[in-house]
Amino acid sequence: MSATSNPSVRIFVAHHKPFPVVETETYTPIHAGRAVSKHALGMIGDDTGDNISDRNPRYSEASVYYWVWKHLDEIGADYIGLCHYRRYFNFLENWKDRLYNWAITREGGWSYWLNRKSESWGLMDYMRTIKTMDATFLRAIGASDPSVMLPVLDGRDVVINRAVHCGMTLAEQARRCSPESNDFEKMEEMIAGLYPDWIPWAQECFHRRPTFFNNLMVIAKRDVFRRWLEWMFSILLELEPLVPHYEDPYQERMLSFLVERLAHLYFTRMGEEGGLNIRPLSSFFLELDGV
Image (cartoon, rainbow, N blue to C red; front, side):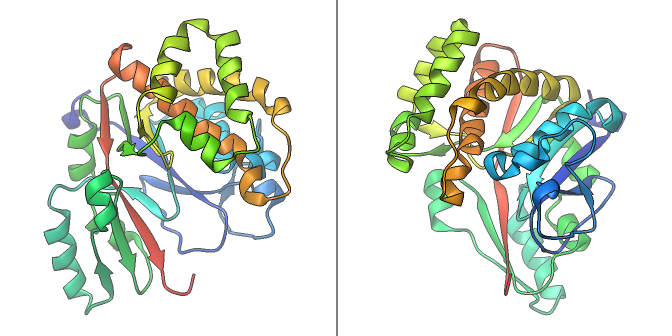
C-alpha cells in the first residue's frame, strides 16, 4: 500500500485518569477500564459490546486491545493502532530541530530533552511539557500529520516500539520483577500446550536474547492486527484462571506484563520468519507538570 493511496489510520489512545486529551482524525482517546473506573473522562470506553473492561486492573491497556480486536470491523481503518496517553510514536527524523523551532514560537511553553538512557538503550526520545498538551503538539511531532506518518507506514505491516536492551534475558527479568511468582513459567507451558511449534522461538526470545519490545504500542494493518490478537488472546484467556490475584496493584497487573512478552515473541518470529515488514520506532514520553 503506497502512501499516495491515502490509507486510513485510526490510533486509539488509552487513558485511565484525568489528563489532557487530544482527539484528531487519526487519534481517538478511549477510557481503559471504564467499567471499574472512579473517573468520568468523557470519552468512549472499552466497556461496550464484547469486552473485558472490568478486568482492566489485571490487563491494563490490554483491555483496550481486546475491545479493539472485537470491534475491528466497525473501526474499519486500513491501519489500527494503540498508544498511551503519555506516549506517542516519534515519526520525525529531524524532531530536535522541528520541536525546538515550534517550542520557541510558544514563548518557552515547551521544553524537551533526550534522555541519556535512551541513547544507550534505544528506548525513547523523552519529551516534557510545562504547559498543556494539545493537537498542535501532536502536529509538531508529526504524530497526526499524514505527510509525515504515511511515508513511515508505507510498505510496512507493523510499527512497534523500538526494542530495548535489558541487560538480562526476559526470563531473568521476570524472575527479578516477581521472584515469588511462577506466572512466566505458566505462560511458557501454555504456549507449549497450544502452539508447540512456537517453543524454539520462545526459548530464543525469552531465554537467550536480552532485547524486548516493551511499553506495548503497535500500529498494524487491520488483518495483521487481527491475527496477532487472535493468537495472543487464545493464550491469555486460557492462562488467566491460572494467574492468581495479588494484593499489590502493581503485581495485580501481571497479565499485562505477560501481554508485553507475548507480543515480543509474536512480532519477533513474524518479522524474522513470518514475512511481516516491521518498522521499530522510538516514542515520546510526556510529563505534564502537576499531573
